[in-house]
Image (cartoon, rainbow, N blue to C red; front, top):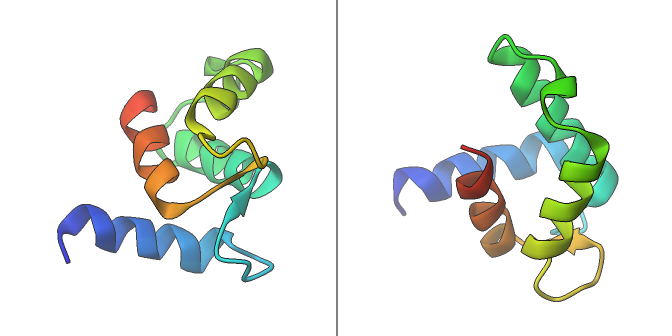
Length: 79
């Protein structure tokens, strides 16, 4: 397991509140808000519209939730 996989697993431990194995839109938004806050930035740096657009692009299965594989893509797009 590489470092990126470890980070994804930590995200799942912290944000997959319903233990579904996926992050739904609400859980993903919470991750984004808290991550930006830890980086010293406000969530307002990413508008709701930009979040929605990015989520839609990354949600390859179009099921309104992100798999770990989709989350890797999401993170790479916001970094």
